[in-house]
Length: 95
Image (cartoon, rainbow, N blue to C red; front, side):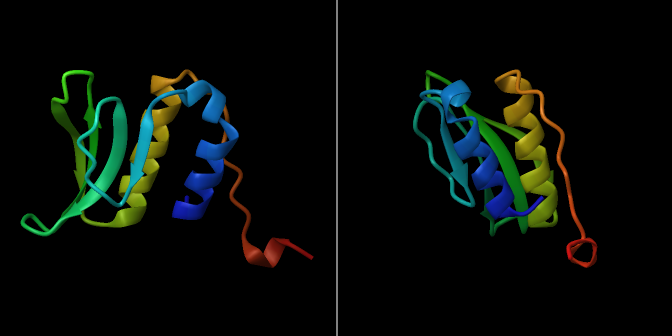
């Protein structure tokens, strides 16, 4: 999944996501946040959650951004009970 596909997914399901802030490639420490960011210190992408008390919980760490995006996608789906399968098309399959 690309970052743009994730943005499209978030926009499509905004009604279910509600007041949660979804942070893409940034560390945002506001309440009710799910996101990922690149940590230069560890040279890894970190998928995180911030609760109502503004406690930050690192859910996972990855070497590349696409793995972090996929993990955040799965986290959003499970957090908000969204049932949807990803349809990935190869450019060669499109006429």
